[in-house]
Every structure is written in structure tokens, then in C-alpha cells.
Image (cartoon, rainbow, N blue to C red; front, side, top):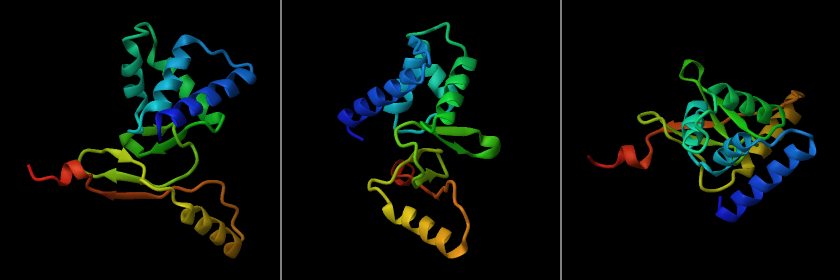
Length: 150
């Protein structure tokens, strides 16, 4: 996602939150900005650490509450990994594939959009009569850094 797209996403997201009457505290804006600008699908703890320099009194609970609010609004995609915790995607909150490194835990988005996955979900829903509310497609393997000779 380019810087222009990131800024557009940030502005639009903050505008929607404000239009719903939600307070845009400096801490909340910082959390949203961090979520929208990061490509690495951060944890809540990583988001918290990232904003502490600018907002040292921000609690971890504030970050959790903001993430919860954004999830309720459909503005962040949660990738749950059981006991390993959750990671969050604020850049692309709609269902899309993820590439997950089994060695270092890096999560990235494929370089191209995958319309075929949505088409498959729609086709499966039509064929089965199942009402699909969400889907998740993760590919596991080794990232380029972990595959590089050491």
C-alpha cells in the first residue's frame, strides 16, 4: 500500500470514527495511525510499545479498548493464533490471504489482490446454501529472510 493510500485510509478511518461521535484522543489517533501504517500485522503489545515514546502514560488497556472498538466497526482484521495471541491488520480489514513464516512468525500480504478467493467463497456459498460471514486463508512456510543462506 503506497503512502498516499495509507494516508487516505487513515483520514477516512478517522473521519468515520469522528462522524460516529467517537472521541479522537491523541492516543487513539496514534494507535490508529500505527495500525494503518504498519505492514507487519502487529500485536497489541507491539502497538503499545510503538506509541509509548510519544505517549508514555498510555496504558495497554487503552490499546486493547481501541482495537476492540475498531473491530466492532469492521476497521481492523484480527488474526487469532490461539495461545500465540492475535495479530491485527488495519491496512486491509477485509478478508484476504496471509503469508505466515513458520520460523520467525512474520506475517505479510501477498503482493497481488486475490479476487479469486472471494469468488470461491461466493461459489461455495451458492453451491452449499451456507451463509458465509467471513473467511480466512493463511499460507504457512518460510519467508525470504528465513530462506536466505546464513
